[in-house]
Each structure stands twice: as structure tokens, then as C-alpha cells.
Length: 483
Ligand code: TAP
Image (tube, rainbow, N blue to C red; front, top):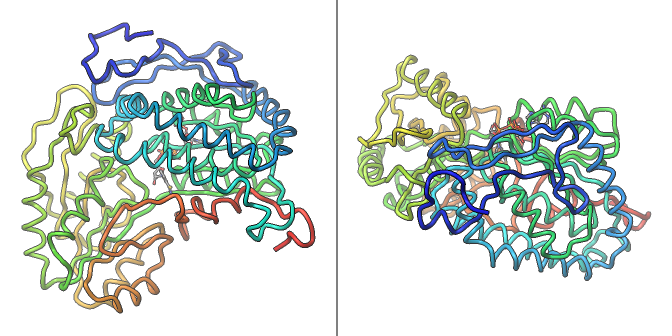
């Protein structure tokens, strides 16, 4: 099927988007029980891309039952057999990565350079990585016969739709669990495309089910008594609601929530490199990244020099069409998110911080926010405390390493941090003192499927990625397996 509206530019014609999609349940695309649908819109043009089924509690029940039925055979398969399916999925993601990258950029608004060079390679890498684990679990300290938990109910956000799906589905399947996944309302398309890949890979029916819908679909999924494991990535507010829902049940839960990371630059840091790291830290994916380096802490003695260089670099950033390969900053994912960013930036000005953006023309249709820098920020300002989830950087200064630690840790979150210094001893000292699940040194936003990722405090609990990511989907099965 082709687009039934505006003529598709060349790069957009790479992927066929159907005018409507059903839910993916028990290996088939089916309409919602009550026939409800919603529209998914391209945030860069406000065009309707497709109409998607809205899953209700009945659909959740149907999908959980399908996953339960599939679980018996899937969990009984030897790990090496499960691995074959995961390897097949990984290869299909690679083969179809052009289509997927365009689809992701259309539905999410992120620059094609990022979806093509970051999201898609990481998605394939996750499936390859966990495929490699599937037949090794017996020998990796998980007991003689590690038990999967059963049906995993997974709810994901819109900022990395396909990558979050891979983080959730790959370890679940490798460990023998089956899945019901709900993508975010504003970015359902790549998950539905992935459902097609599951069919292409010959994955048994019911092992992966995709339910598109809104928050009510997610709430019904996490509350369903047939779900054994809940994996959630999203806001701290919804994470807390989910924790309350599952309290008292024996569901296992992992929550990946918000962040307010400090990117800390010392006076001995390679400043050019640090500028690139700061830009990547806050403008990658329009700053809609849970681990974004949204607070720049710079040592006072180099603050002026660093900020001059940063402003020069920001002037070169190109904001615009996500499908243009030269674009650095794409569209904000939704009108609601744009309103949230706008309100917080206005609060920054109202509270007395100094706002600066390079001059840049923003397209008239779609949701856009210019890259923005705030100086004169104090720890009391909302822009220093609250997650903005947009291309807005708050700059604070410090004099001593101890002061940097105190300011970096002055947040209810604890997901990530960055340190820029030439001194190895200082890196290690800082890494010990910072309360953050992930700490980067002289780099930022570096991801690897073999590394665990997750937070402290209001950033959630549990780890995804690496060997730790398997544990969230396994139960010890025998006394020797118990840890
Ligand atoms: P949320 O509103 O929390 O949405 C996340 C997902 O939960 C969406 O699929 C959403 O559906 C669903 N949902 C909403 N209400 C629900 C409920 N009561 N019960 C169950 N599911 C529900 O977050 P968002 O606005 O999409 O994403 C932004 C936030 O996510 C930021 O705070 C960001 O830091 C955080 N985030 C964290 C991480 C990690 S790894 N820590 C990664 C990405 C994002 P709808 O889309 O239909 O609302």
C-alpha cells in the first residue's frame, strides 16, 4: 500500500505505510474488540500517517491469553532453538533497516541520521546479543534449569520506539518468556512493522503480541492477573502508579523512569571534545532522552571559554526535516511535549535565568523547538530540577570537585552522568561519589547491549541490557538455582 495523501518524497517512498493497522494478537493483525481506532500523526508535518486500532481491556485479555498459551511450547524449546528465531529477527531488522529508519523518523520526528546510524544498529545489536545468551543460560550461574517468569507485559515510551521495544522483547524471548507489548500512542508504527518481522521470522503465534492504544491500554495490561512480569519505561509519575497497581501481587517489576543528568566539565578537559559531548548529550533526539545531559556543570575557570565554543557549535546545528540527511535536530514528538518544553523554558526566564538560542528558522507546520541554552541558572530554578525532555540545556558552574559532586547529586533522579577530565584518578573518584546508574567519562550517550542500564531513586529500579537484563526475566528454579 502507498500513501493516500501528499506525494511522497523519494526517501519517504522507501516504506509503505498502510492506511490502517489492527492489533497483533496470536500471530494475526485483528481489529480492536470494540472497533475503536486512533490516528498517528507525523510530528514534522502534522500529516496523518495511519489509523491504528485502540486496544481495550478485552483485547488485553485476548492477547495475554494468547501469550499464556504460547508460553508452554516457547519456554520448553531448547535455548538454541529460541536463539535461531532471535538471530533471524536480528537479521531481518538489518535487512529492513532502511524502511524502519524512515518509518521511525516519520512517526517520531527524529533525524534520519540518528534513526539510521544509532537506533537501528542498536536494535539489531540487542537481538544479536540476547540471541547469543539463549543457549548459555544453564551455564551462566542461573542454576541448572533457569525458569522464565511467564507472560511479560511491557509498556514503552515514544522517544526510542523501536529501541525500547528491542530492550524489552529481546531478553524476554531469550529467557523463554512470551510478550504483550504496548507502544506509546504517538509512535505505534515501528512496533507494528516489527510484528510483521516476527511473522516473517516464523516466530510461533502468540510469542509476541503488540497492542496499540493509550494509557488506559497500558493500565489494563499491567493490572491483568495473567501477567507475571511488568517492564515499564516512561515517566516517573506513571511508574509510581504502576508500582501501586502491582503492589501486593507476585508480579516482578522493572521501572526505567526519568532523569536529570549532570554533564560535568573540569578545567583540564579537552574542551573541543567536551563541546561535542555536550551537544550530543542534550541535542541527540531533540533532548527527549531519559539520560540526556540536561545540566551542564562547568568549572568556573573555563566557563566563559567553554560557553563561547558551545554557542559557536550550536550556531551550526541544522533544525528541520527529519528525512533530510543533513538535519541535526528534528521535530518534537507531539504538541503536548512541545507545550511541556515551552512552559519549562518560560519558567526558566521568569525565574531569572538568561535564555539564548542561535537564530534558526523553524518550519511552519509540525512541532519544533530551537536548541536553547540557559545561563545564570541556580539549583533552585525549575529548569535545574525538573526533567524538561527537550533541547534545553541548563548551565551551572562549580569551583571544586566536591562542589561538582554536591550539585550533580542534588536531584531526586539518578540515571546517568558525564565527567570530562584528563585525570584518571579524578574520574574514578567522581564515579564513586556520583549517584547515577550510568556514568560516562569523556563521552556521552554511549550505548552497548552488553552494558546494564538503569537508575537509582526516582529514575526507577532494575537493569536492562547485559547479563543483568536477563535476571529481570528469570526465576531460580531449584535450590541450586536459587541465589
Ligand atoms: P509516560 O506518559 O509515562 O508514557 C510511557 C508509556 O506508558 C506510554 O506507552 C503510555 O501510553 C503508557 N501509559 C500512560 N499512562 C499509563 C498508565 N496509567 N498505566 C500504564 N501505562 C501508561 O511517558 P512519556 O510521556 O511517553 O515519556 C516521557 C517520560 O519517559 C520522560 O519522563 C522520560 O524520562 C521517561 N523515559 C525514561 C526512559 C528510561 S530508560 N529511564 C526512557 C524513555 C523515557 P500513551 O503513550 O498512550 O500515553
